[in-house]
Structures are given as C-alpha cells and as structure tokens.
Image 1 (cartoon, rainbow, N blue to C red):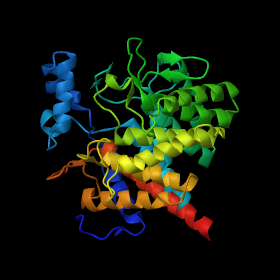
Image 2 (image 1 turned 90 degrees about the vertical axis):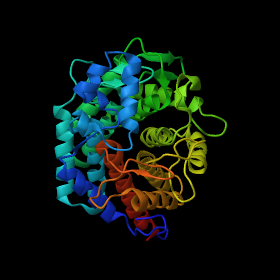
Image 3 (image 1 turned 45 degrees about the vertical axis):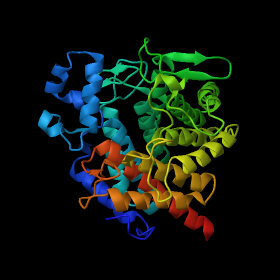
Image 4 (image 1 turned 135 degrees about the vertical axis):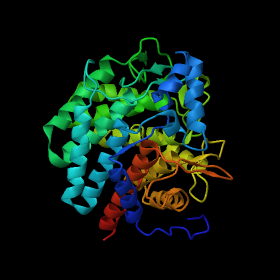
Length: 406
C-alpha cells in the first residue's frame, strides 16, 4: 500500500484489526520487544555489566534497520503490557459484536497475567521480561514497574466490568499496594504527588506519564470500591502532572525536562491525555478538563502531520513510529466519545495512514518509517498490540457514535 491511496480508503477498519489479531494469535501473542537486546547472552556478556555499554547495546539493536535479534539469540516471548493491550482489544470487540470467542480470548489472556504476576512486593505487579537499562535507572529482567502494572490493572478492570470476575478486581486493587508502598515518592505536598517508575530508592527521574497512569488506575479502583482515601491520592497524582503542563498545552517527558534527551514526544503525550480522561470518567472530578482540552489541541496540531503520520517529537517529524500512530488512533477515538465527535476524523485519518503505509500483507505492522525507507520488521507489543488496541477503540467509538446519531 502507498500514500497515493485516497484518504480513508479503509472503510470501517474491521478487516485490518482482524488481520493483526489473527497474526498475533498465530504467533501465540509472542514476539520481540523494543528494548530486549540484553536477552542475548552474547550481548549481555559484552556489556560487562556497565551502564553505558548496556545503553549502547540496547540502542544499537533497537535502531538497526533490520531485525538482528534472531542472529543474537534473542527469543520471542509474551510481554505483559502487550497481553494487557490485546485483552483490551478483544474486550472492545466484544462490546461491539457480542461474540463469545472474543470474551474467551480476553479471559485467557487475563488469566495468563494472573499466572505470571510478580510476587514478593506489597501487591501484585508486573514488569518486562528483559534487563532494561534506561538513562535514569536499571530494571532487571522481570522486575515490576509502575507503567506495566497500570496497563495490566486497567485491562483487569475492563474484564471485571464485563464479566463480574471478582478475582480481576482483587488483582487490580491489590496492585495499588505496590504502587503506593513500593515505588519511591519523588515529591509530595498537600495537593500533589509524584512517584517513581520503578521500585528503587536510588531513582530520581520523574517520568511524567507515570504518576498520571497511576492516578487514573487509582481513581477507577476508588470508584469501584468506594474508597475515598484512594480517590484523594489519585487526584494528587494527576494534579502533579497537570501542574507541569506548559502554557502551550504540552508535557515534557520528564520533570525537570533536562533530565532526559526525550522532550515532547508523541505517545507519552497520548498516555497523559488518556490518563486524565480516565481519571475524570472514574472520579467525576472535572478540575483538569481544560488541561485535557489544551493538551488535545496541542497533540493534534504539533504531533501529527496533515496526512495522519505521527511525528516523532513536537519539533521532529521522523521517524514515523507505529506506536505513535496507534496511540493517536486510541486517544482521538476516546476523545471523540467523551469530548467532541469531530475527533473521530482525526482517529480515522491516523488509522488510515498506518494501514496504508505500515501494515504488512501478513497482518502485522512495521516498526518505523523514515523519509526514504521503512524499517519493516515488527515487534509484538510495540507494533501489533498497540495497533490492535487503537483500532479496537476506533471501532468501539464508531459503533457507539452511530447509536447516538440514530
């Protein structure tokens, strides 16, 4: 497919979604990951347990124009965040079509997340199956973190609300003990709170979406369990992030911004917007709605091109990363439902660009597109779970808006 196709060439996006889900199912939802270079025994040995060598190794494998992971002995695996996203995709499809096989698929995936939760902390939690060296921290293989735990928690709550399975509510609510008691508090006063990405007392980097995601999950559990203490803490977490919004409506990746070379990027902006919306929907607190609106406007104007291609940063077009497209499809679909129906056109435009430019005949989605070439390998969570999630949210939004318009 090429960009020469007419806009919105894909009618209802159902077939592209089915193709990526069929691909993932054939692969048993296993694949490579963006930061999994250190799962290679050879690569890990050659880093000599040194921070900057680990960073360089991860970046080299991640940025390679071809997928060298098989040559390095990296094996495919299931990613807990990816499984959560696939589960939510099937649950969205079930809401649209009420087909029992979708609920069965989601149930199987959520049960798997129950089986592999990380024990030994204050509550159930989840992490990545690789050694992850970031600029601000090191997370060993399998160690839990806030972001993965919140995505799993949200998927579990989706499942609970559809099926009434109390175990899934128990897990999601229990995960807040990990978030509240094991993660480092980086800042707190009477009105705001900021927590760390990982449970490490030495970490100091404040990644902006972390507290927003935690606050959104906490607000949802608070609503379901009628826990006012959780509701108050959720507000403080989200308030910290909203307080750091720039006058233009943006958020830097970290606070302060100079703590990371990543500045105002695409998909983390989408994460924050979705988290603010999730918080408001769960709590009924509309205090941050104007911040949400300003953020949506900035997101639309500064992080996507007119043809729907996702920009890499607010000041940098390339590479067009499939994760950015997927997040945009989801964020604008949800904004179309809960903010302004006109955002559905933005979601459709981004989805059409992604399908026309980034979906392979086999159903999976490519990793990145540069000005003169496309990196055509795929990663199960980064590319396919995210696009399945985005397209399923688009289908759900279209379905619900059609009902409203009748």
